Amino acid sequence: MAVTEPSTQRSVVARSFQAGLNAGGSAARSLLSFAFILALWAGVGAAQMVPEAIFPAPWSVLSAGIELAQNGTLAKDLSVSLSRAAIGFAIGASLGIVVGLLTGRIAVVRMLIGPFLNLLRPIPAIALVPVAIVWFGIGEGSKYFVISYTVFLAVWFNTHAGMEYVPDIYLRAARSLGVSRLREFMSVIVPAAAPYIFAGLRLGVALAFLSLVAAELSGASSGIGYRLQEARQYIRTDRMFALLIILGLLGAGVDLIVHRIGQKLVHWQQG
Amino acid sequence: METKQGHVHVDNVEIRFQGRDGPVTALAPTTLELAPQTFTALIGPSGCGKSTLMNAIGGFVTPSSGRITLDGAVIDKPSEQVGVIFQQYALFPWFSALDNVRFGLKRFGLSKREEVDRARAALDEVGLSAHADKFPQALSGGMKQRVAIARTFAFGPKVLLMDEPFGALDAQTRLVMHDLLMRVWQKHKATVLFVTHDVDEALLLADDVHVMSSAPGRLIRHYALAQPRPRALNRAGSDLLDIREDILGLLRPADATAL
Ligand SMILES: Nc1ncnc2c1ncn2[C@@H]1O[C@H](COP(=O)(O)OP(=O)(O)OP(=O)(O)O)[C@@H](O)[C@H]1O
Ligand SMILES: [Mg+2]
Image 1 (tube, rainbow over the protein chains, first blue to last red):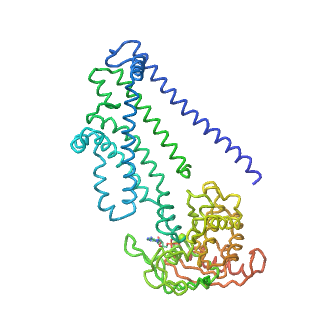
Image 2: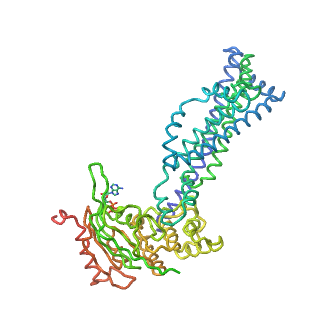
Image 3: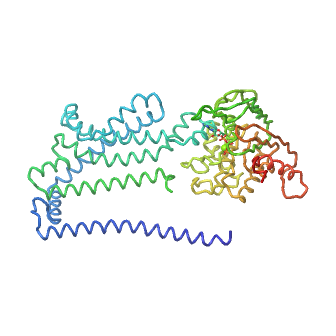
């Protein structure tokens, strides 16, 4: 005991130091990658190898972005798009969780709708736009439909999988402790499936952003997706680039937030 | 207050499973009585059906023939009368040690205050009061099993099934766990059935030791141990040592004795 203890301590210290290095290292590596691409891009722009209208230089994109921000369209587009994504996500995610809980635990429900939902999964959001327009018109309804549909399938699938693979030993322990079925469900089955549900929600957030642009193809008069379309008509590639970068940063930011929340809530999953 | 009994009769129980090439007998017809509040150890070669027999008493597996009763009532599904302690602990990782114990107290419908007090007392009994708020991942194997023991005894089953509960622990920790289990069991009392691969463990703990044959398992030998506890196996001339030789002989595969 006395002999092994110091070495264990040292290895713990070494490991946490290593982890710190890794965390710092990965941020540094990302920055390095961004800097590299930006330099390459700036080089191409400065050499004027490609016409600006086809492939704008970084500074043109930056000024297009500043222009969008200053004339107020960016703020409006962002708030419209984000609220579409948020509402579509909320509808799709809540339905996905509820249906996943049902198909995961109730054999009849699983038999009746599981195979059908699996058949829907390969259909891309954009293919639904025509149907959405016929059903919901070109108002907000069709956007919510397209986004929530995509989110629903992802969240449903993960929730369902999580519910199906609740380790038997947890159920046995719960039964031998004489708890009610309701408590077993709420305190054992749902927490056991929670890591899967969160993975589904995280995927759902990414999909909400992906399908947002598709949804805004269904006739919109504002929003990031609409502004991209509009930029195409005026061949404003600088605006397109600015909008794409904003979309990317936004998606990554929200993903990070959801990931952090998930880590807090399903804290037992690490390691 | 109900009188705590815990009289288990395993009456000519046979258990077959549907294997890939036809039915497999996991447990040959077995008859076994667990007297109220005794401690019975079950020992036998791997795959002989020890876990299967436990699962049947726990109500997780239905006998193919024969029946199992607890205080006269047939056991056909898991119930709160029969507690289980698993080798893999089966603590809920989303609950702290305290909340794991509280989970077992839910059925009493106590006030929150009372529930927490009782759970704390149970953790105190297994020497874990300082770790009540830790999550299972932050506890050692021995500590996890102590939480599981606290959870089960706090909840007060009549029968307690333990399937190699200390099998994953190192020898030192095991000795500590033996003392702890004896202490807690003598306080709360329950009819215990304890599966182990460790002959010494069986001899140190049990009132009755049953030895099973290799698969499909039958009970082949019974030893009633009246030696007072705490027991030790290292005193020369102890009759426990003779029994130990005897059991080791029974467990030795037939072909190995020729060597
Ligand atoms: N659910 C099942 N389906 C099919 N066969 C099973 C099932 N459970 C157990 N068996 C078989 O029954 C036999 C007895 O298994 P059991 O787990 O009871 O043995 P054991 O004595 O507990 O062994 P060990 O000491 O290794 O834990 C084995 O041959 C096993 O393969
Ligand atoms: Mg076993």
